[in-house]
Image (cartoon, rainbow, N blue to C red; front, side):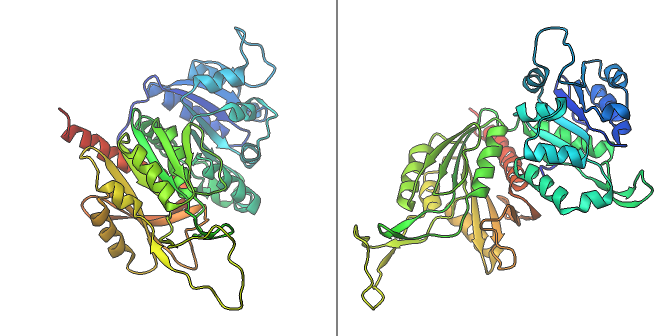
Length: 415
């Protein structure tokens, strides 16, 4: 998750669509709406039918001073399809409480009421504050649904441990008001960080063919690079993604360039590097290629063939050599030994401003996983530990730090 601000950031004129689902914690939602309004936000409330059993819509209409949607069938003052108009109107969707049932519907694309239909039409940032019984929270089905929403970029706040309405103790309690509001403020602050910034991301593996049917490669899935590209686009950046061969959908709002080999990726990167403000080298480029690839399949002869290899081009180094003073470069360094020393050496050699040092361990391999961990090393060499988190969450952390460096660099090199 992005680093939350320490101050009370104004939400003046930010448009919050506030969803309420049917749990006992719904009564706490009234205080959240009141505080959003106090901080200057405009609020529209959308309630599930069950939520109306806990809190009357009139309460939210009074506190929000705005419309409250409770049904797909309710009349509107003017012609509009409310779940579409709310989706186009809002800057952020906040749902508190989000019950286990609602999280399941969101995760699996069910749309049978005003709130779930709104979610399917929503294209902006999402913050969810779950609340439920501990047993429900710990169930594998719920955990999988929550993980799926995180992978898609939703910020999940809580739940917290404490006394529950049922009299039990454990995780499932709605997060505290301040924590929810800080998550909203952080996400909306991030939303403005990369406006007008041009971002270039490399992602995935490369394939170095020996013959038409065989190649050298690695197990990179491309998920980290794709998460960075997706989050950069969500944060307002004009984003280009140079992708090796992966089985991933193109993130919304991202221009994708598909490549196969390290040579292909180098050409694509060099053609676009000069136009970029922020360059992120997340690709796992194969280190070696066949010195003399052949155009016919190599046949078995009873003896293994002798392969002559060459080193592939170092894409980050080649582009880093032409780095402008106003550009920010971010790299990744995955290693099994001396991880921090190896990452700092790459940082110096390739002119990275930031580098993510990844420990590659058999018990928790970063390749192909939806999670990542490591250390984010800044320009001063300080290594900030990043505990295990989803790759989307890590993408937000990296992009926030890069945005701070860009802002400082822009000030340094202003005419």
